[in-house]
Every structure is written in C-alpha cells, then in structure tokens.
Image (tube, rainbow, N blue to C red; front, side, top):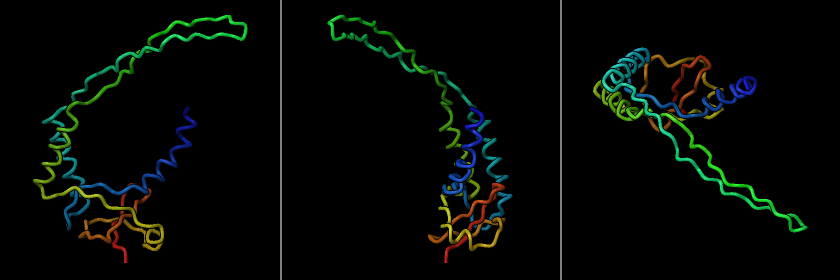
Length: 157
C-alpha cells in the first residue's frame, strides 16, 4: 500500500500544477503579508467557530437471499443478510468557519480569486521566479506553480 502512495505522489503533484490557484487577492500586497493575514483570519475563525466533529452512520443495507438451481433441478437458497452502514465524521462548523474567515479577509480588503494555470509554452518561456507582491490581474493573467510551493503570476502576451 505504501508503494502505491509513493507512485501516485508525482501524479498528484503534477495535477496540482494544472489546477487554478485559488487565493485571497489584493493588488500591491506583499505575498508575505497575504500569508500573515490569511493565517490571522484562519486562527481567528477557528477560535470563533471551533471544530465540531459529529459522527454519523449510513443506514444498514439488506442484501436479499439468492436461489440457485442446477441443470438437474436441485436448488439451494442462500439467506439474505445486512451490511453495516459506513461510519463517517463531519465537521458541522466547517462552512460557518470558512464564512467567518472570508469575512475577516474581506474586512482586510481581500477578495477570493481563482487564477488559471499558464499554458506550457508561457510557463517554459517565463524566467524562473516567484511573485513577491501581488500584481494587478486581468483576463490575461495566469499562474506558474513552482516546485517549492511558491507561484509566479504572469500576464500572457
């Protein structure tokens, strides 16, 4: 099982680089300030709306019995049985906590945005780098994700 997770890791990382970058945005703000404000709002939201994990169970399912007969007309019947419902947990406060965090970020002047990934030709042509200050965005903006978790926002020509 561990081997399968190790084999899937490069695929997961590659897919992550293809996904849009969803962040809070305020042009002209240093990325370090964005990260600090995001952490402050996340902690504040967690303190205001703590995790409330509830455990649930799906209802059991009944699998009906089966009757099988061979060519000679001899039949056997297997009785039905119940399968337990899956047990799962849900943080019932997650949505409210996310809304509280979003309101905190909005009060600081940020808006949630989703920046599409840059096409391969643009990503290859751009000099290596990382965005340190959030630039103005327009419909030509795209993001290049770096292996270290940083990103570079560029404008397609």
